[in-house]
Amino acid sequence: MGLATRIKSVQSDNVITIMRPSQLYSNAVGAGIYPLFAINDGPIIALKLVGMHTAAAGGATTLACTVTGGITLDAGAVAMNGAVGTIVNVGLNAAVVQAGAAVALPNTVALFYPKGMTIGLQPLLAPTFIIATFAVSTVTMEWYLQYQKLSPLARVTLT
Image (cartoon, rainbow, N blue to C red; front, side, top):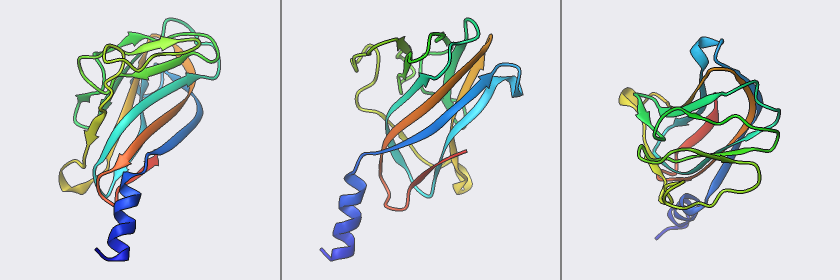
């Protein structure tokens, strides 16, 4: 195995975390639909998708997360309002309900799918988006996506 191949192999095994800075999300803007991350140039395994409140929620905000094409990342819209510091785990599995807590959340099968979700490119090699849909009210959050590349060319960017 050549050096370039070995380096690409090692890099694809690394767990990468990308952070989306704090932003206000509102159900009144674009029906509350916000693309959070774009997957480009190759597939990834999304290991964790976590949001954290950076301001108190404006009411009983609900959240549902999908990937381009309507593939669900959780069991549907769940109330996730809370105080500053409240974290929200998105299940990465259509059978898993999101969970939110002020201090800590265990990564159990019931609250979070521990094997992650493989996310590839949509047809025509266009980017695939991880999308959050907020309803009912407003919330200010930052987001973290932890992933591994399946292709050495894969990139995840902010939208």
